Length: 317
Image (cartoon, rainbow, N blue to C red):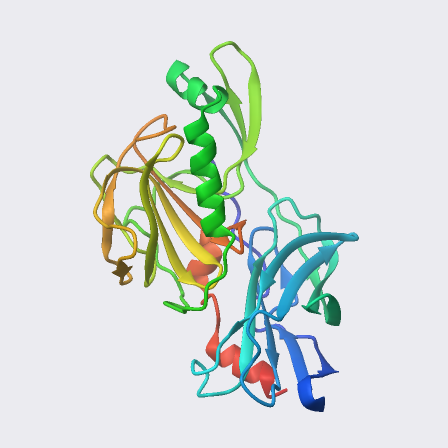
Protein backbone atom coordinates (compact mmCIF):
# COMPACT_ATOMS: atom_id res chain seq x y z
CA UNK A 1 0.00 0.00 0.00
CA UNK A 2 1.26 3.39 -0.96
CA UNK A 3 1.98 5.86 1.87
CA UNK A 4 -0.03 9.08 1.68
CA UNK A 5 1.76 12.28 0.71
CA UNK A 6 3.10 14.34 3.66
CA UNK A 7 0.72 16.89 5.10
CA UNK A 8 1.22 20.31 3.58
CA UNK A 9 0.11 22.95 6.07
CA UNK A 10 1.16 26.04 7.97
CA UNK A 11 1.65 24.94 11.56
CA UNK A 12 1.44 27.26 14.53
CA UNK A 13 3.52 29.99 12.90
CA UNK A 14 0.66 31.46 10.87
CA UNK A 15 -0.51 34.89 11.96
CA UNK A 16 -3.60 34.30 14.09
CA UNK A 17 -6.76 36.28 13.52
CA UNK A 18 -8.02 37.86 16.72
CA UNK A 19 -10.93 39.99 17.83
CA UNK A 20 -11.99 41.72 20.97
CA UNK A 21 -15.24 41.65 22.91
CA UNK A 22 -16.55 42.99 26.17
CA UNK A 23 -16.10 40.50 28.95
CA UNK A 24 -17.50 40.24 32.46
CA UNK A 25 -17.36 43.46 34.50
CA UNK A 26 -16.71 45.39 31.25
CA UNK A 27 -13.34 43.69 30.86
CA UNK A 28 -11.90 43.16 27.40
CA UNK A 29 -11.76 39.56 26.21
CA UNK A 30 -9.30 38.59 23.51
CA UNK A 31 -10.00 35.64 21.20
CA UNK A 32 -7.42 33.97 18.95
CA UNK A 33 -6.68 30.87 16.91
CA UNK A 34 -3.21 29.38 16.93
CA UNK A 35 -3.63 28.52 13.23
CA UNK A 36 -5.74 29.94 10.44
CA UNK A 37 -5.12 27.07 7.99
CA UNK A 38 -6.00 23.49 8.94
CA UNK A 39 -6.45 20.25 7.02
CA UNK A 40 -9.22 17.68 7.48
CA UNK A 41 -8.31 15.50 10.47
CA UNK A 42 -6.07 18.07 12.13
CA UNK A 43 -6.60 19.68 15.57
CA UNK A 44 -7.34 23.35 16.07
CA UNK A 45 -6.88 25.34 19.28
CA UNK A 46 -8.85 28.47 20.19
CA UNK A 47 -7.92 30.66 23.16
CA UNK A 48 -9.61 33.33 25.27
CA UNK A 49 -7.75 35.77 27.50
CA UNK A 50 -8.44 39.03 29.29
CA UNK A 51 -10.60 37.83 32.18
CA UNK A 52 -10.55 40.22 35.15
CA UNK A 53 -10.55 37.25 37.51
CA UNK A 54 -10.49 33.44 37.32
CA UNK A 55 -11.91 32.19 33.98
CA UNK A 56 -15.53 31.02 34.32
CA UNK A 57 -15.78 27.24 34.05
CA UNK A 58 -18.22 25.78 31.54
CA UNK A 59 -19.47 29.06 30.10
CA UNK A 60 -17.67 29.25 26.76
CA UNK A 61 -17.69 26.91 23.74
CA UNK A 62 -15.85 26.97 20.41
CA UNK A 63 -17.86 25.82 17.39
CA UNK A 64 -16.36 25.10 13.96
CA UNK A 65 -18.74 26.21 11.21
CA UNK A 66 -18.36 25.75 7.44
CA UNK A 67 -20.92 25.96 4.67
CA UNK A 68 -23.57 26.91 7.20
CA UNK A 69 -23.12 23.64 9.15
CA UNK A 70 -21.63 23.01 12.59
CA UNK A 71 -18.76 20.58 12.04
CA UNK A 72 -17.32 20.31 15.55
CA UNK A 73 -17.60 21.85 19.01
CA UNK A 74 -15.53 21.91 22.18
CA UNK A 75 -15.78 23.42 25.65
CA UNK A 76 -13.17 25.86 26.87
CA UNK A 77 -11.15 24.85 29.92
CA UNK A 78 -8.92 26.90 32.17
CA UNK A 79 -5.17 27.15 31.65
CA UNK A 80 -4.80 29.25 34.79
CA UNK A 81 -1.68 28.05 36.59
CA UNK A 82 -0.29 26.47 33.41
CA UNK A 83 0.65 29.88 32.01
CA UNK A 84 2.21 31.48 35.06
CA UNK A 85 -1.13 32.44 36.56
CA UNK A 86 -2.37 34.22 33.41
CA UNK A 87 -6.19 34.04 33.23
CA UNK A 88 -6.59 32.11 30.01
CA UNK A 89 -8.82 29.39 28.54
CA UNK A 90 -8.40 26.99 25.62
CA UNK A 91 -10.65 24.77 23.53
CA UNK A 92 -9.29 22.01 21.30
CA UNK A 93 -11.34 20.99 18.28
CA UNK A 94 -10.62 18.75 15.30
CA UNK A 95 -11.62 19.31 11.69
CA UNK A 96 -13.56 16.20 10.53
CA UNK A 97 -11.81 14.18 7.82
CA UNK A 98 -14.95 14.65 5.71
CA UNK A 99 -14.77 18.47 5.80
CA UNK A 100 -14.75 20.21 2.42
CA UNK A 101 -11.97 22.67 1.63
CA UNK A 102 -12.75 26.36 1.79
CA UNK A 103 -13.45 29.21 4.21
CA UNK A 104 -14.73 28.43 7.70
CA UNK A 105 -15.01 30.09 11.07
CA UNK A 106 -14.80 29.32 14.75
CA UNK A 107 -17.72 30.84 16.61
CA UNK A 108 -17.13 31.60 20.28
CA UNK A 109 -20.31 31.05 22.26
CA UNK A 110 -20.99 32.18 25.82
CA UNK A 111 -24.03 30.23 26.95
CA UNK A 112 -26.57 30.68 24.15
CA UNK A 113 -25.05 33.95 22.87
CA UNK A 114 -22.31 34.43 20.28
CA UNK A 115 -19.33 36.30 21.75
CA UNK A 116 -17.30 36.50 18.53
CA UNK A 117 -16.08 34.78 15.38
CA UNK A 118 -12.63 33.91 14.05
CA UNK A 119 -11.99 33.21 10.36
CA UNK A 120 -9.87 30.34 9.05
CA UNK A 121 -9.47 28.14 5.98
CA UNK A 122 -9.80 24.37 5.62
CA UNK A 123 -7.25 22.99 3.19
CA UNK A 124 -7.68 20.20 0.71
CA UNK A 125 -6.56 16.68 1.58
CA UNK A 126 -6.95 13.28 -0.09
CA UNK A 127 -7.21 9.87 1.57
CA UNK A 128 -6.52 6.32 0.45
CA UNK A 129 -9.21 3.76 -0.35
CA UNK A 130 -8.83 0.11 0.63
CA UNK A 131 -10.94 -3.04 0.30
CA UNK A 132 -10.95 -5.49 3.21
CA UNK A 133 -12.43 -8.99 2.71
CA UNK A 134 -13.77 -10.41 5.99
CA UNK A 135 -14.12 -14.02 7.09
CA UNK A 136 -17.34 -15.26 8.67
CA UNK A 137 -16.34 -14.40 12.24
CA UNK A 138 -15.50 -10.81 11.38
CA UNK A 139 -18.55 -10.50 9.13
CA UNK A 140 -20.71 -11.54 12.09
CA UNK A 141 -19.03 -8.98 14.38
CA UNK A 142 -19.95 -6.17 11.98
CA UNK A 143 -23.41 -7.32 10.92
CA UNK A 144 -25.09 -9.27 13.73
CA UNK A 145 -27.03 -7.21 16.31
CA UNK A 146 -25.78 -7.68 19.86
CA UNK A 147 -27.00 -5.79 22.97
CA UNK A 148 -23.55 -6.01 24.52
CA UNK A 149 -22.01 -4.37 21.43
CA UNK A 150 -24.54 -1.55 21.71
CA UNK A 151 -23.80 -1.05 25.41
CA UNK A 152 -20.05 -0.99 24.78
CA UNK A 153 -20.43 1.65 22.06
CA UNK A 154 -22.61 3.82 24.32
CA UNK A 155 -20.11 3.59 27.19
CA UNK A 156 -17.18 4.50 24.97
CA UNK A 157 -19.01 7.49 23.52
CA UNK A 158 -19.96 8.72 26.99
CA UNK A 159 -16.23 8.76 27.83
CA UNK A 160 -14.99 10.36 24.61
CA UNK A 161 -17.62 13.11 24.60
CA UNK A 162 -16.93 14.41 28.09
CA UNK A 163 -14.62 17.31 28.94
CA UNK A 164 -12.85 17.09 32.27
CA UNK A 165 -10.72 19.69 34.03
CA UNK A 166 -7.38 17.94 34.53
CA UNK A 167 -4.39 18.51 32.24
CA UNK A 168 -2.09 15.49 32.32
CA UNK A 169 -0.07 16.37 29.23
CA UNK A 170 -0.01 19.08 26.55
CA UNK A 171 2.11 16.95 24.21
CA UNK A 172 3.61 16.51 21.77
CA UNK A 173 2.69 12.82 21.69
CA UNK A 174 5.03 9.94 20.86
CA UNK A 175 4.15 6.84 18.80
CA UNK A 176 2.99 3.89 20.96
CA UNK A 177 5.30 1.34 19.28
CA UNK A 178 8.83 1.56 17.92
CA UNK A 179 7.88 0.05 14.56
CA UNK A 180 7.11 2.38 11.66
CA UNK A 181 5.38 -0.27 9.55
CA UNK A 182 1.78 0.74 8.95
CA UNK A 183 -0.89 -1.38 7.35
CA UNK A 184 -3.60 1.30 7.36
CA UNK A 185 -3.57 5.08 7.68
CA UNK A 186 -5.73 7.74 9.24
CA UNK A 187 -8.82 8.58 7.20
CA UNK A 188 -8.61 5.59 4.85
CA UNK A 189 -11.91 5.13 3.05
CA UNK A 190 -12.61 1.46 3.71
CA UNK A 191 -14.84 -0.99 1.86
CA UNK A 192 -15.58 -4.14 3.89
CA UNK A 193 -16.49 -7.17 1.79
CA UNK A 194 -18.69 -9.66 3.65
CA UNK A 195 -18.84 -13.40 3.07
CA UNK A 196 -22.12 -13.09 1.13
CA UNK A 197 -20.50 -10.62 -1.27
CA UNK A 198 -22.24 -7.51 0.10
CA UNK A 199 -20.21 -4.42 0.92
CA UNK A 200 -20.15 -1.76 3.61
CA UNK A 201 -18.20 1.48 3.83
CA UNK A 202 -16.50 3.21 6.74
CA UNK A 203 -13.71 5.68 7.50
CA UNK A 204 -10.65 4.48 9.40
CA UNK A 205 -10.42 6.51 12.60
CA UNK A 206 -6.74 5.91 13.42
CA UNK A 207 -3.55 4.28 12.20
CA UNK A 208 -2.73 0.57 12.20
CA UNK A 209 0.78 -0.64 13.00
CA UNK A 210 1.58 -4.04 11.52
CA UNK A 211 3.44 -5.49 14.51
CA UNK A 212 3.65 -9.10 15.78
CA UNK A 213 1.52 -10.31 18.67
CA UNK A 214 3.25 -9.50 21.95
CA UNK A 215 4.81 -6.20 20.85
CA UNK A 216 4.99 -3.73 23.74
CA UNK A 217 2.41 -0.94 23.45
CA UNK A 218 3.23 2.23 25.37
CA UNK A 219 1.39 5.40 26.39
CA UNK A 220 1.78 8.19 23.84
CA UNK A 221 1.74 10.81 26.64
CA UNK A 222 1.02 11.23 30.34
CA UNK A 223 -2.59 10.48 31.15
CA UNK A 224 -5.20 8.58 33.13
CA UNK A 225 -6.63 5.20 32.13
CA UNK A 226 -10.36 5.79 31.65
CA UNK A 227 -11.12 2.45 29.99
CA UNK A 228 -9.37 -0.92 30.11
CA UNK A 229 -11.82 -3.52 28.94
CA UNK A 230 -12.40 -6.36 26.48
CA UNK A 231 -14.88 -5.24 23.78
CA UNK A 232 -16.54 -7.22 20.99
CA UNK A 233 -15.42 -5.02 18.10
CA UNK A 234 -12.08 -3.63 19.31
CA UNK A 235 -10.96 -6.54 21.51
CA UNK A 236 -8.81 -5.76 24.52
CA UNK A 237 -8.93 -1.95 24.57
CA UNK A 238 -7.25 0.80 26.57
CA UNK A 239 -8.26 4.49 26.51
CA UNK A 240 -6.21 7.30 28.10
CA UNK A 241 -7.36 10.83 28.91
CA UNK A 242 -4.60 13.42 28.37
CA UNK A 243 -6.31 16.78 28.79
CA UNK A 244 -9.91 17.95 28.68
CA UNK A 245 -11.57 16.35 25.66
CA UNK A 246 -8.39 14.70 24.31
CA UNK A 247 -8.07 10.90 24.42
CA UNK A 248 -5.83 8.20 22.94
CA UNK A 249 -7.15 4.70 22.17
CA UNK A 250 -5.29 1.39 21.79
CA UNK A 251 -7.22 -1.53 20.27
CA UNK A 252 -6.90 -5.29 19.58
CA UNK A 253 -4.39 -5.88 22.40
CA UNK A 254 -3.41 -9.42 23.28
CA UNK A 255 -2.95 -8.40 26.92
CA UNK A 256 -3.67 -5.29 28.99
CA UNK A 257 -1.20 -4.21 31.71
CA UNK A 258 -3.12 -1.29 33.23
CA UNK A 259 -6.41 -0.77 35.04
CA UNK A 260 -9.03 1.98 35.01
CA UNK A 261 -8.18 4.98 37.18
CA UNK A 262 -4.43 4.40 36.91
CA UNK A 263 -2.17 7.38 36.15
CA UNK A 264 0.49 6.57 33.54
CA UNK A 265 3.53 8.36 32.23
CA UNK A 266 4.54 8.81 28.60
CA UNK A 267 6.22 5.61 27.41
CA UNK A 268 4.76 3.47 30.18
CA UNK A 269 3.66 0.03 29.04
CA UNK A 270 -0.09 -0.38 28.53
CA UNK A 271 -0.06 -3.96 27.26
CA UNK A 272 0.93 -6.11 24.28
CA UNK A 273 -0.37 -5.98 20.73
CA UNK A 274 -2.52 -8.78 19.36
CA UNK A 275 -5.48 -9.55 17.10
CA UNK A 276 -8.46 -9.59 19.45
CA UNK A 277 -11.86 -8.31 18.31
CA UNK A 278 -12.47 -7.48 14.65
CA UNK A 279 -9.00 -8.01 13.23
CA UNK A 280 -7.67 -9.68 10.09
CA UNK A 281 -4.22 -10.17 11.64
CA UNK A 282 -1.92 -9.03 14.46
CA UNK A 283 -1.65 -5.24 14.67
CA UNK A 284 -2.14 -2.22 16.91
CA UNK A 285 -4.88 0.27 16.11
CA UNK A 286 -3.91 3.66 17.57
CA UNK A 287 -6.50 6.41 17.58
CA UNK A 288 -6.81 9.98 18.90
CA UNK A 289 -10.13 11.64 19.70
CA UNK A 290 -10.49 15.38 20.23
CA UNK A 291 -13.87 16.45 21.62
CA UNK A 292 -15.26 13.22 20.20
CA UNK A 293 -13.87 13.72 16.69
CA UNK A 294 -11.38 11.37 14.98
CA UNK A 295 -8.03 13.17 14.74
CA UNK A 296 -4.87 12.36 12.81
CA UNK A 297 -2.33 11.05 15.37
CA UNK A 298 0.58 12.31 13.24
CA UNK A 299 -0.60 15.90 13.75
CA UNK A 300 -0.25 15.50 17.52
CA UNK A 301 3.15 13.82 17.25
CA UNK A 302 4.47 16.72 15.17
CA UNK A 303 3.35 19.49 17.54
CA UNK A 304 2.02 19.96 21.08
CA UNK A 305 -1.72 19.76 21.56
CA UNK A 306 -1.46 23.14 23.28
CA UNK A 307 1.66 25.21 22.58
CA UNK A 308 2.39 27.42 25.61
CA UNK A 309 4.76 29.80 23.83
CA UNK A 310 2.35 30.23 20.92
CA UNK A 311 -0.52 30.95 23.30
CA UNK A 312 1.44 33.57 25.20
CA UNK A 313 2.53 35.14 21.91
CA UNK A 314 -1.04 35.42 20.62
CA UNK A 315 -2.34 36.79 23.91
CA UNK A 316 0.26 39.55 23.86
CA UNK A 317 -0.81 40.69 20.36
